[in-house]
Image (cartoon, rainbow, N blue to C red; front, top):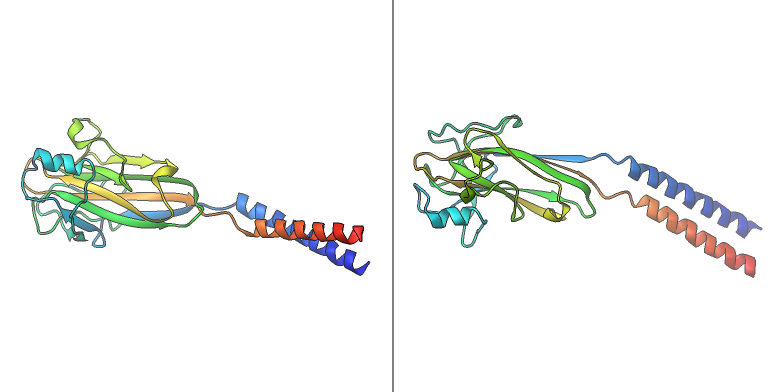
Length: 226
C-alpha cells in the first residue's frame, strides 16, 4: 500500500511538472538580438581600390571570401554622404574598409543562436556607397548588385532586407555580410543594422516531467501484477 501511494505521488508530481513545463513553453517570450555597424564590425577589402571592375562586382555579388582577411572596420565615411539608415538603433556608425577611402569589400557581423531555436526572423536596413548586397550565412537577402534592380542597397534610400527562412540560420555562429561595391569611384562607406528575433528551445522540464510520470506508471503496473 505504501509503495502504491509513493508511486501515485510520483505519477501526480510528474504529470504536474509536465503541465507546468508545457505552459511555460507555450508562454515563451521571443529573444531579440540587435546588430549594428560600429567599431566592433570587421571588414575586408577586395582590391584594388577605386572604381570596381566587373570581376570585383561579381565577387561582391556572390559572396566570395576566398583569401580575404577581416580586421576592424574604419569608423567614418571618409567624405561619403552615407548616413545611418532609417530606424537604425542609437550608436550605429558609418564605416569604411581599411586601408582607407575608396575600397571595395565586405563588412561582417556575427551573432550566436542556441540549439533548438524556433520562430526566427531577421530584419534590417542599410545604406551603402555606392551599392551593396546583404547576406546571411552566404544566403542573399537583397537584390543583386549586377542586376540593375531598384532594390539594390545604395547610399541614400535605407534599403531594407529580411528573412524568416529557418534554413538560413544555424545553431552557433551566424554571419551577416554587407558587401560594398565602390562602382563609381570616390569615397565609399556603409551603415547598417539588423534585428534577429527567435524563441529559445522550450523548457526541458515538460519532457522530464512526462518521463517521470511514465516511469511511475510502468512501476505501478508491475506492482499491481505482482
